Length: 335
Image 1 (cartoon, rainbow, N blue to C red):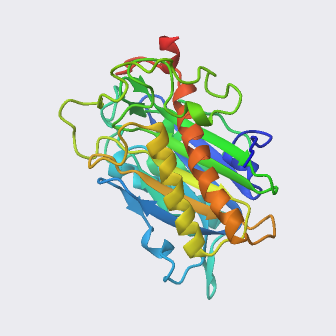
Image 2 (image 1 turned 90 degrees about the vertical axis):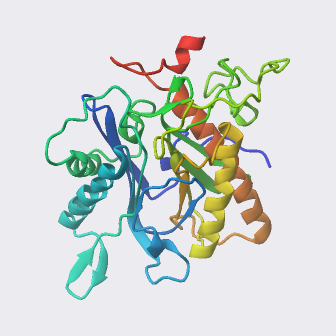
């Protein structure tokens, strides 16, 4: 299965999606909104032990709502769930939402990561700023957006380095597009030992995250378990992501795609899915290709979900930029 990137190497290479970011440099946090031009089939898979979510139960295949209007990834721990209210308000102003009688209810599931101990000023007063950040993210939504220290990746960290917002896309041989978006805030490490080499290196296309490949030979301590904290703080981490395709999928197939995309976490982060991560993947199927996959194509799609997600994770860390009072340096400091 030969693959190449989409024209932008972003999740928005999947036709029907736009992404908006909003950040607050003082608190070192922000949020990212994925907007669906038309309601999209969605699912979710949580494999981390400390998730924080909103409206994920409705994504189960047996529940009524078949499609959603947007997804939100946010910093701020539980406070960040307010970002979805801001996105919902902005969509309601535009008349977008699930129609119930005379009312339209925007369906906006969300997930959060913990970035409360990253050197930012979290003394925001009575109410956190995430509702307004969510609203602002909608206003900035487009097919082109920045990576690294922006949106939900603004205050993200991994073991020994700043994290960030990452994205990547792949074009399969049959013309199908798959894209990933991820806020990388893992307890584990995305690089091999203390080197600049990414665990995701075997999946890199071109030099999209440095082109360093794998070290040879592998360091003797390559698989030594390194985490962000000696004594992990519950809910202090989490990698949250979206995997999307332009194929027509059922909710059950979207669920399987989300499960497969978690393999990208395992390929790019060591260790991943720990009890102190809230690792989560949303899946979206826009259906804009007009095609329903045969089984062989769906198997290829699931494989591409893992590789594309792994690349997005590395790209998020690769693109991070420094700021005052950062607890960790950026990846480029290792070159």
